[in-house]
Length: 320
Length: 320
Image (cartoon, rainbow over all chains, first blue to last red; front, side, top):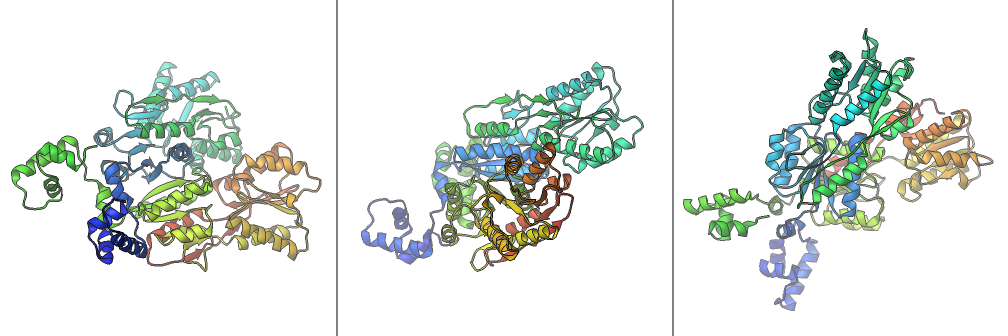
């Protein structure tokens, strides 16, 4: 790729002269101007915008960290972020981490090096100390409750929403309630577990670790949950499933095995993804596109730190 | 944000001295070195990587243009691209265009300005003349048949695959076959229409424009297709649906209206998305994750131009 020195050499002028022509400065003779322009045309020289950034300090790029780029949960968040980016003339740099810490640190390093203006982490793997450290270099926006810190976020109160769902199932007559989650670790998972344990204490039920299913992300994961349930002597009568995709998988598998929903097993999903509507799954609606939109707006606002809670809504359908 | 001038002022040295310290040049006194380092520490100055890029000419960013960021078809393509980017230490810049030409031109302009190393366009809106023009600035990779040009691509032969699907339906006894598509325009849509018209000529069937449904992208679009079919005097007995999502929508709506599938209406989807498996939809499988993977590898290979055709596979299930 030709650079400014090559142009200068081709045109037989100094680098300063080339720079002046490119930036439309005065005091360059018509002859030299013409020589530079000809040279530029020949090598198709493009003013390197990366250099231009040095003066403005802005890239109009916002980083977005997702563990998986094709999971519908993150798909809807990214849709909201991307729609708002479009409105505001920003572009997104997508980081898929597969929950590997070093991938997330790469994204944080790009923020540190000013290659992006801000970083939205849809689901983090790095510890709070690391996040806090990098937050001094530029805005980091999280999708979890960060109240009491100086990091902005748009979040669901997972303690509150899990408690709400558990009480709903309880009021529908269920005493033996299990749940399935994605990761075992992570702030959101911890809050959900606390809500579950508090619920058991409140209604004086014993804790049974067999009632909890981890690593459930996709439709296919529903299959082993059902296999597991079938082998249990005392299976739960209701399941709170932290993803509509997994709930759809459980529902499909139960149909094949003639397990009646909701009579033998009540199912409650999360998110209100299109699949929940298609399959008539009772679910807790999280307005993910709206959450994405707000995350983006927080990312480009580098004057205020804000934490915004988004309310969830119970959608009653046919699986409870 | 502090820049090199601020550092120089704080440390009481010249800009050149600051630059020398940052780049570990010799000939700087220990005292000045210390003053610069202290100043840098105070303002958390980060060597701007955008400046570093000027010397290497590489950004390790690959642009990805999609019309919608949350459609499962593009979701799977982006998943393939992102997985391979992860392997090769590249990041992706995502452009959502909503099929607006100026959005696509923004992406092309970033390529022109060397802000990205290459651009993958998953579905384009710009005319060929524009693409061809920008292709002189850097690698543009398309997801359509570009044989005979100097633009790389990984593609499905949509003429061939549509013909294959039509013949399959014909051999199953269907004479009145309709189809639904996303955009009316676009290379892929044109190839499909040609295949359809050639099929009609071959089997001596009249062309009926009522048998073609455009602007069908999502599950919800299935509903109006069914409404439309119900109002037709002579409806098609089979539909070739260019998206499993739409096929799932048609199937769900038919079930509600007691239209028997495949007896009253045969349905054939495209892509073999998870929803097709869930709902037992006969479909033409396109290995989209694999296509995405190949698109990425073509993007980072700037020595060869290649056009790779990906074969589709008929998956027989219960809707034909």
